[in-house]
Length: 124
Image 1: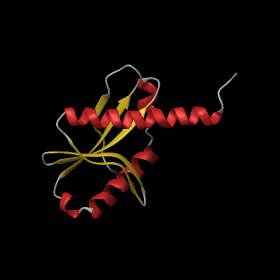
Image 2: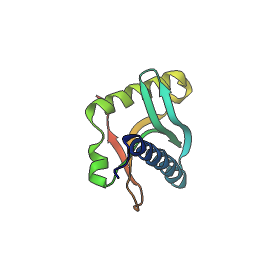
Image 3: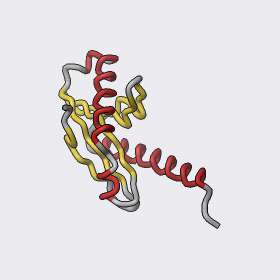
Image 4: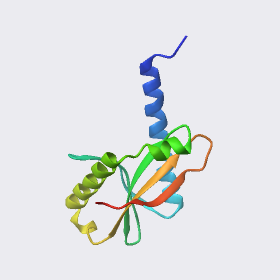
């Protein structure tokens, strides 16, 4: 019997939450301090805000069945929304404005080490 759409959605949601926790742990191992996770702003959500030294990274986590699908999941509209959310985050915490800002992506696929794409895009 095919799975109900709700159960598929719940599975995807759980996998996404797992991927975000895995990505945060991965960043910690790489020396980052997690400042926020699933940070909501009026203009969008940021999966992870992490700091290492004088750098603040706004990290989008993409969890998919394979790396190609994960990499393709971040379109220009989503990048703009994340950029606006990052600016809202900085406006809320102005003491962080002096840090260098970067936008990263972490791709999570089953049974693979997360792939960290540093400086994945630059704001328009």
